[in-house]
Image (cartoon, rainbow, N blue to C red; front, side, top):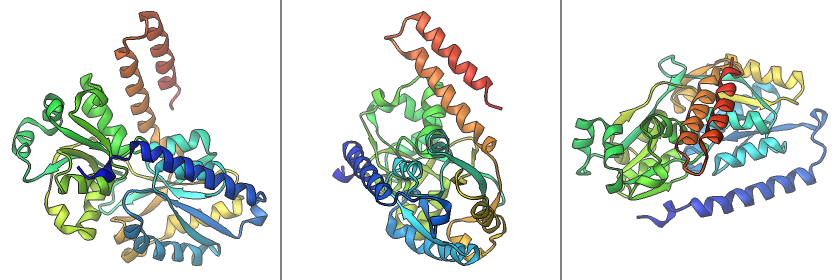
Length: 333
């Protein structure tokens, strides 16, 4: 097992350092008024390494800068939590988030979604997968049994990698559909469970036979065909999730209407197929917060199941918590 994958403790240290840097930057740049904004830091999620991100993002950021008249600087982070914290403290003013990270950012970072990604085939969604190495002895049996069913039944013999806890397709969706719906706690059942940190790391862990099974999005697998085709050829998909709402583009609510309008105009009208093709998408459409209610419902449903399984709660406490969660579900409109 590659020791780099054992990052659960290191991740906490990374986030702490990132948060400290963000706070320091915000303290030294206290004037965060719209009048003072000459450039926008645009948050880029860590779906893969920065080395692979930069060649894709730099032409996109340059086009955004030219068309909005505002300098756009990609803000690369190694943890989902870091971009949320950066937006919370005004270090990052806009970002391309995932559904789950957006839900968290909407709670604490004063952000709103204004655009949604459209996939290369024109859809507004994507998928989570469970993957194995084609040469792994479990692969044929997993496909025959149904990948999710096989993983649940044989978890005690398997090593497994999630992306990271703020990932939609790398954690929330497979957690709910594969484990929660089958009354299984993934933290307790596997021979070894790790959080690899991003989609690329999950895919490479499988390709290099460092884990038996991992989570990944179909979009990340598509990108891997370009960045590491040999690794992609080693990977077999054994489970496909229901459709997940595609990614939101967000900005801080306290940006001026003028800046918001410039960003909206850019995203709603940007059609450079060569640049967009690198992202494996066809463009962006207008969107609003309710587009990601499905993610909110998944999170609450998962919490309900977890509450039912808690052994340290009395039946009365369980029913009270579940009633509160059901009330939250009703409030999603």
